[in-house]
Image (tube, rainbow, N blue to C red; front, side, top):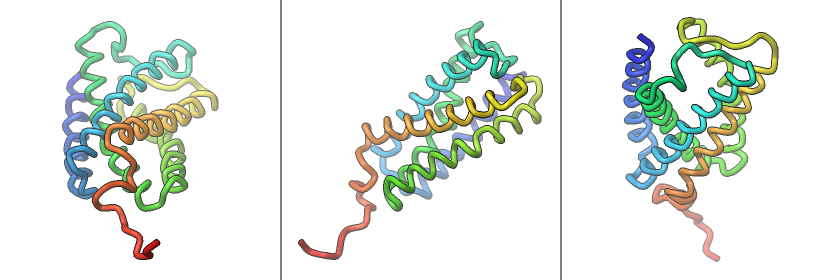
Length: 174
């Protein structure tokens, strides 16, 4: 049952990716960068899940380490779910610069834990978090890290946001 839910999640995030590509007017190079950032984030998230389980911050009921096909499904789902984030952070960085990007990454750290706690309430069969503040902080740090790292990978692939064809041009001649 969990695999079917992850497939549905992947389909939903695929639609979000298409919408993000459309609304951000991202070119093929930027989309490729976002997908590469998502691929890195997918690997990172699976590693964070394993680390959190080993430390005792959370316990997930899906078989992360038991089957290669499930890990592959989870990886593809997380990679696709992260790609729209990087198209949005690209637009934020282009419009507001480094400070705006820092605020966006911090915002991800703020909304990430409540999102994950909501998911465990809606799908209790997926698992849950240990009591206390440590799992919340660890989850927030993980969100900040994977959003920042995925954005960095996208920037390596697609170049800086200010260099895009939609970037604002200075009206003042030097």
